[in-house]
Length: 458
Image (cartoon, rainbow, N blue to C red; front, side, top):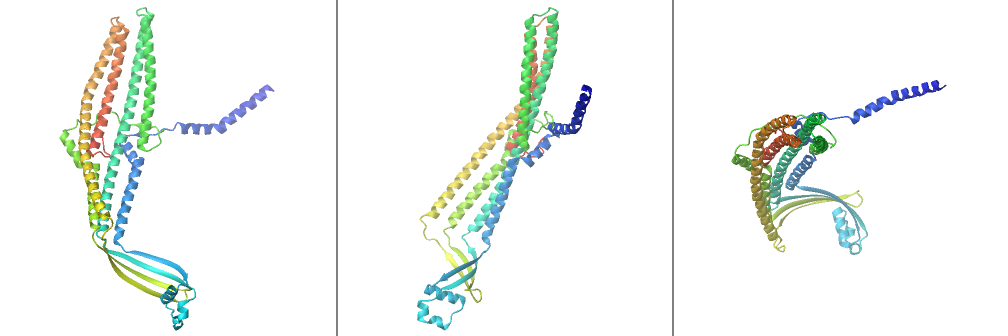
């Protein structure tokens, strides 16, 4: 009986596996889904396609185009149509309404009817057209300002795209640095474990004291903690990169572009400053804002001039839509303000002050561009020179560790010398990758300062 029950249980378990096994496998596959390889160039393109800052500036571009259309609309006539209803017993309006409806008869001139008319209904359909022949140049100046503003927004788009590229480059390189630091810690840990085995062998042979063995164990524990911390730095750097790319922060790409020196030492500082002053989109944008402010001065001054406008109305009046009367009116108007409480003079002063402010902002940014370029240049130059020094230090530290290890095995050096050599090699490797990282970021920021960074960086 028990064997029969055992067979039934076995059958149930097998059936459960057959039914739900594929589901579990599918879920596991989805949980273990990883992203594919990603080069720096592909990352830049992805960032430009998905970063929210691009969407924000593109909305501003669309809005600037709409403002140009709005400013251009002032040159076209305004056409309105309206439908109104009225009912009145006012003697004047009642008689005038009948005139507009073209239904006046001789009985309507009776004094009793004129003085005490019956209520009359009126449906009025009016088509009106207004056209400014000369509006003191307000439309022309407004259109010029809208076009200048559109150019400034386009330049803003270029600058935002450059910032997004640099954000992607910096985030990408920092992931590479975090990964290299993790590898350095893992290599150091392997070395520490090998040294521990050597120390343990010498301890078992009675050649060293137990404190040496304990120091080696402590060193391994410290490196295990460093490895865990380095792994967390990798994950954080990946999240920052994903944010720059505009994708989900939990994605994990396999970065394909190595951390290495890919360009030469930057040329002269004067060349880079000249590039910056000639290519910075934000500097050109501020110059356009200054021009817009100058146009505003013209607009404020021209408000003193007269304006000429023409208008026309076509009207249909009816009491019940059975009979209608129609009429039209065409006219022109000249408008000249004589006094408005010094409002025009105040606007002129405000516009002139805004021009001075815009000019000062241009000067301020000009100086800032020079300083930013100079800073990025010297950082790139320093990082470039540190690469060779750091690379040579790695070779020297590797040779130093080999010598110290041999002498420790011979009993000539202490455990302190061995551990110091391990730390020196780890620091040398870390400094080397840090110098590569610093040079790459400094070159990206130098290109950003010069306003010439694009999708083909590196």
